[in-house]
Image (cartoon, rainbow, N blue to C red; front, side, top):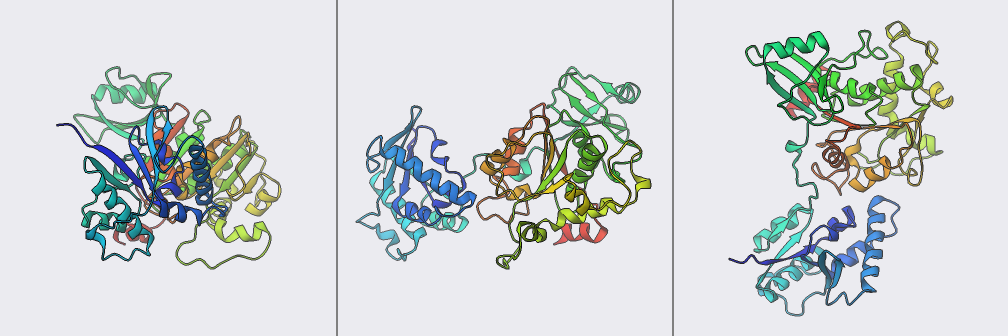
Length: 449
């Protein structure tokens, strides 16, 4: 039986999250309801990623308009894809005559159902990130789908860690020689491996797969810790290893609140920047999204405006710097006892900056931490990573379950996007942190609430 051809109708929130979404559906027919263009028009003056996507899509439509009649359909690319603008139907289907058509969502539904009626040999599918709209579409017999370019759920997200059962001899060899080759096994670049004795599961060894050596190698470690911070579990040991390895230029760490993502990243940054001098400066930033109701504009210069948003960064910096020099690693260092975070910022060794003005920059020889990266879109993440100059390391941290940006979700946010795209690259490393170490109360609250 021949499959029905598909017609994909886009909601505005899909376009506002990815201005290039219409290029990702192959040779199918793509429909943009007229009301969607009006909704997008409301955002085009915003100086945000949403505003940029609105403007980018409008320019793309203007380019297609010059190629042909958008009312009849214009080919998106040489590979196919016919895009058209669909007007609100004159003949409203009787199944939706009870809907309030002054609402944009109901106009989209009505347009799609009219398409369904006039194209019985084709399957009309509404693509929207609005859950309620998908529910309403289902109730009216209209197929609908979420827009998810990754096609991966958060539960399926690459963890960066793999258990591998081996013989006792292989575990013992690893401890003796600090590396071991397992020719019959296939591992990802920089994947962390927990070798487990098949006869005695409590007899284990941990390492990282080194693609060039084609072997599992031992981790970078420091018996005295890094700026007084010691890994408290095996996942934190993995995190320190990739943070301290200069060959790994992109690090992603995903984990719930209290797993130590930001603390580990800052401690490693201090060691590599102030102690080793590998990087000239540590740059720390995070996207600005309020938790709950926003309190409005903040007074003062840019530094004063940033202080409330960057306070979690200052908290971690001050915690590390207050631990005392006797617990720090003993090597030549630029720092002096008692030096606080503000002094390091004043001297230009640490920079706390907003992401707002990063577009167009080139950032060489810096250690960059982007905290709360789950609130960024894939396009914003691309913009940040492509700013990296020679000898720059980027660390992305976040929790894909704690998202404040209304235009991304747990599966298609920028952090999850990077984890999946870079999971087999030699210059990238990833680990998912599971165990909370902030406090007993914090860990129990994370599990119960």
